[in-house]
Image (cartoon, rainbow, N blue to C red; front, side, top):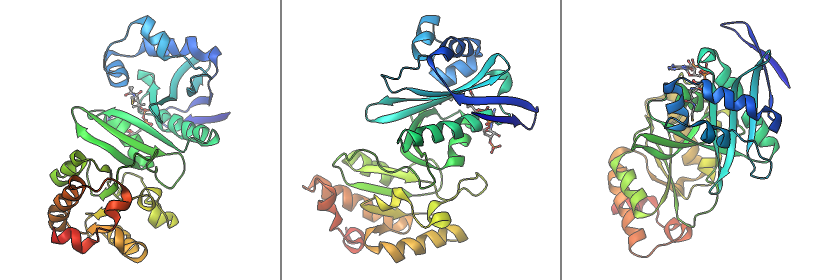
Length: 295
Ligand SMILES: CC(C)(COP(=O)(O)OP(=O)(O)OC[C@H]1O[C@@H](n2cnc3c(N)ncnc32)[C@H](O)[C@@H]1OP(=O)(O)O)[C@@H](O)C(=O)NCCC(=O)NCCS
């Protein structure tokens, strides 16, 4: 159990792991949400029956939650639920407690609890207009699994300091694209469409609070587990340049592009290699940077 207070209000929040005894209070929290918060949390307005179903904390289903109380009122909750081979997270803070650091506190506690259960990464599906949730996640460091097309962005966060890894091996070659901003370059999109497993990292936080694990700790799971890497971060940024140098020093063979110009050539070449028969990571690993650049 952790006793902390939000500086803006000096409110003492008691944050702890939830049990089934907390479920009725979680339902009350969900029911109390404003239409906007309800929309951001559930993507639609929910009936009481549906809210009772999603509020469940069930050891058998693997759902784990942490809750925040002020006195006898439950004012926040964060949970993850196993879903299709990943653990999907969501955070909910009562409207009048939003913007005072409680979401950050709950997410921190959820990550610690997940790590204690040997769950090392969590996935979030977030509406692109949900600035608060995106800031919360980006402060931890996100790996973009699906770019913000169609209203939602899908990201993985780590439960330790090394960035989320790639999760279950899909058998498809893994391409890490390091590029500032959440939007996806059309060449990257084409690669994804061709069947590559693509993740995008937006690089060091620069004000968002995200520390690059390569710079801070000397290693990054996302980079280590990638087959190929497109390094498209701004070279005139000191930290980004340092990352580029570290990549070159450790795995120069994986770097298929170090500028957008190179990526414009390398990405179609890689997509073509997959179409023409390469089916696994091993098949495309032989594609050196020069081969990719040559098309
Ligand atoms: C999203 C949510 C969980 C965030 O929790 P919170 O307690 O409000 O957020 P925090 O106070 O911890 O702030 C987190 C960050 O978001 C920023 N933020 C908070 N509210 C914001 C807002 N309305 N607009 C823009 N940024 C906002 C904070 O400034 C902070 O960033 P900073 O550290 O860079 O300053 C909460 O607002 C919520 O429950 N929203 C409705 C339900 C929802 O959207 N859930 C997420 C579904 S995946």
